[in-house]
Image (cartoon, rainbow over all chains, first blue to last red):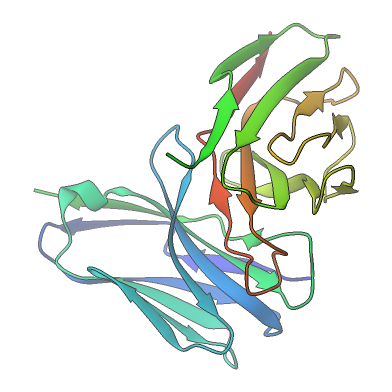
Length: 113
Length: 116
């Protein structure tokens, strides 16, 4: 059974810092890994999707990497801003499955002034 | 604007009542999903549908029912058999299978259900 873990559960950094969020998964037979952002009481916003054949994806100040063999992904946020404060979730899908993403419990990020 | 809408945003239910949560998408996506989110837990899949008139149970389907009569719509009914229905419910869609090249999922804004 696929399990997804995100550490730390919460993180507070001052504005302007670069930071890394971690995601690990137990079954390396993944097809996609997706990073999401969730603001309090809101739905999820897709940030980046990495397919298993890729090693990284970039969007603006965000860079996500994937190491399938070690079961790890990182989300790098450059020059953090207070508007980046949210919960960040990673999720994986297994190859060939129609059904679902398996989610981690998220990292709650606070960027302070 | 393309997207996913869910209604209502907040829903209150008395014990013993069935309630239906609406999910509509205009992204022309084939697959749709319902997740439940509880504090301190990851999202859990309730039901999913790959195409019209077909749907499958997810990990926690007991006490829930769905229909998929139109491509755009995937309503979720929370029945009185669901023992602990208070939660945040999220609907999602994707062009294709979760485990395939078109599996990127997009989410609606959610419905918060509270049982009184």
